Image (cartoon, rainbow, N blue to C red; front, side, top):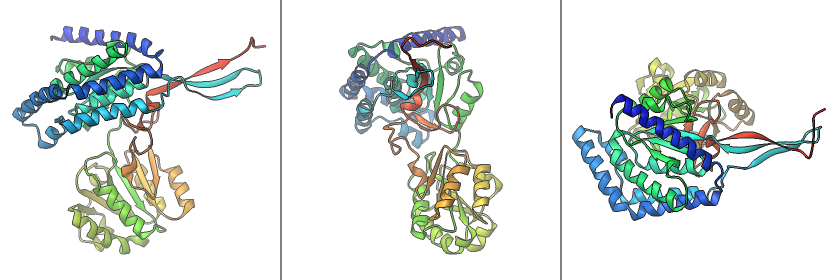
Length: 420
């Protein structure tokens, strides 16, 4: 497509999505659930076709020299297809938030005022590599009553089209417009720019992928964006921390998985506990092959590399951990609020007054007490599923599930009331 054709194509997608969103807003939960279950069945029925289309992407990826980790994320296996289908069935089983009325109260005038939960409208999702995101994102948007435009990476174009065909079939089986979920079928990068300018058709943009993608979307979008850039997560071991909890939580937060946004990147240790805990932590991390980078005080206690100023603001996504010995909780909170990406931060302490202060003063989307940062996840939070994690402060913050894909409007009940 030339530039004019791409612009026209994307505008058409936006207009169709807007029309579909008005239909979805009036659809009952059962019909949405029927569509989700039909899509799940279709994915499993079409497993061989999905794998054949995926093989085209994998071959092209190998020829382009994609790294093994990206090829692994790109691959669709029988197990992966079954997980996609099961994810849709789980979303179908979740409570539908749309139409829920809360905070209904009588006012002095006699009217009742409350909030009704409603869809956002049209959601544009831009993502990389993983074909399962096509199904997951479509399912979450559909369940929450939103039409969606999905723009996956060019490396997964055949896989995404095959998954989209299953989605279209499921929508049709449930009597819903196929335009409820549309997948951008061109790999031209200009389509992303056009999507980011569809402010008359699209209500929210959600990018899922690497930092470069999210930075570009945040910079260029004319539409509100739900996103997080970095996951620079901290654990602070307080003077009053339980030793076993400190060791176990810190080890889990860093080494349970290295490449996730809720993985520990900087450890802060109260000076009164450093001599006791740092050697034990070094032994644990040495066994895991984790490189330690420490401040001057840390280096005087354990043998490790020097931490630079850059380390405090780096998301490693790798077996590397920076460590700083701090005077007290005041210095720990200052450090977190200076270098944190406002994603997830944890305090380990037995002092209840300190936990309350830490929760109040640390300015992050998830603040934890005596728990691993790895719990910052939609499933672990009881959301059933998530479309991403937001470190923004407006609209949604933290793991974004069905409720995060909705908004509220005021509803007022009267019985002939007039204002005097």
